[in-house]
Figure 1 (cartoon, one colour):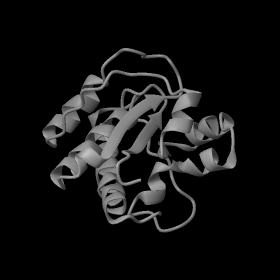
Figure 2 (spheres, helix red, strand yellow):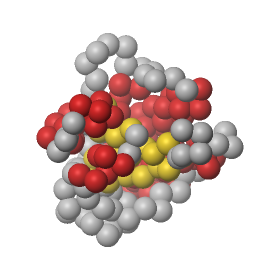
Figure 3 (spheres, helix red, strand yellow):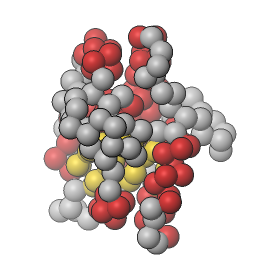
Length: 165
């Protein structure tokens, strides 16, 4: 796989809060390490509520305060994505179930994992959801940033160092 890009996809509900943040944070981590050319990072949503829209302004604002620029436009995940991406990270259990429902074979099924399975603050096999900040205040967006940031640092470490879990 030396000449091929490793393809990573983050998935949440509408692709306007959690998954675009994870995409932007992981891109930033890979750039900081000078390895961004080895990876393709994207995000999508399980639902089409916001297709074509930019990320939620509250999420973009929190990200900017932390030096992260979210530039993506919302799109819906497709069955082709499940085949094309090497890693598909579900932000919560509902996304995980929805993604696995679209699986064609075992190798595709193995690509789909809970995002917080890589959270350094989670030590058991029950991986909590990344909370949806949509209906709350700015504190919820900050909490999501903290979770996503530390988890993306761990994912970048694993990708760069070749770890598998």
